Image 1 (cartoon, rainbow, N blue to C red):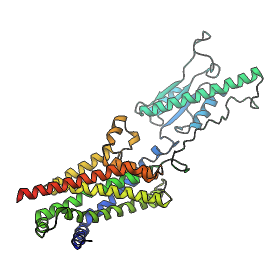
Image 2 (spheres, rainbow, N blue to C red):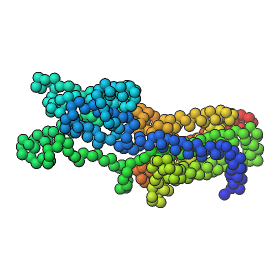
Image 3 (spheres, one colour):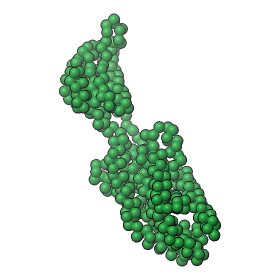
Image 4 (cartoon, one colour):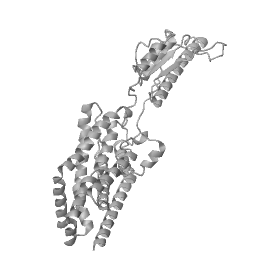
Length: 410
């Protein structure tokens, strides 16, 4: 190995260690983001989690069918039912007082007219009323309405089954209950390359996401050191002793690559041991050595892309302030559209297509291939190719910019 390259790595390491505040921020910032975002998005990634929206049922019918409907709603368990709905006026007052966001009013005669279409017998049918807090999200309003419709359909099916059984002499449940336990539970199973069960959790989304974001934030210390060296004439002196510029840039790559890998180790440990202390699931890494190696390869590719991007910003900017603004805003934009700040599956279709342009999205996809789908190295190639191509183009452009600047000064 070239002694000159070793000397450059030593110089960069000393300069990096002197910037203790910047170095500390590279580890504290992602740790805080992982903890906060994992807690904030925990229910979003947990199927069947209780939604923090309460409702009451005003049962004006008090029939076995209305009670069966309430039991069906309780089985849904997504929304939180409060006891003692009272009458319709009390339910309205409860919504105005924000004790609950929804109230379902079952009219008198609900059970008698359960299977009679409106107007079929010349008699009017009172509709079920759904009282809604207008501040409640339209998506939650629709979700509760669908839950009520599903429960109502199940109660009608139970009643039809009961009547058909009596009519045709089919076997019916003892006691003639109108509410039965059908095997209607739907279990979600993640499709992976192996037989592992379970679904991705919030921590499996947020640890790799904020690790990538933190890796790209080396743009701040890299550009600061680079610009200070340029302003103090250090780079010119290195060029004067015959060091090619690509070797100078190579000397900056390894120290920050090591910092990125230390970030990766620390964020994984946070996900495995600190996040569970706050009530969320622990991060689980793939158990096999080839999968762990694939995980590290993705981490290395993201690091190369991040450091190369930082060197390009440092070459473009004239001052540290410019580098901070351009690099910081660029990182935030890449994170916003790349599924770091907002999970990609929440985005509309147009934004999901736009996410394909972000290097952070390529890295996150690579981590997800390993952690969620347990994919092979071949499955990683598209993400790795994009990241390495981005790194190569950024480094090439950085070298060209610096050569052009030197040529302009000479």
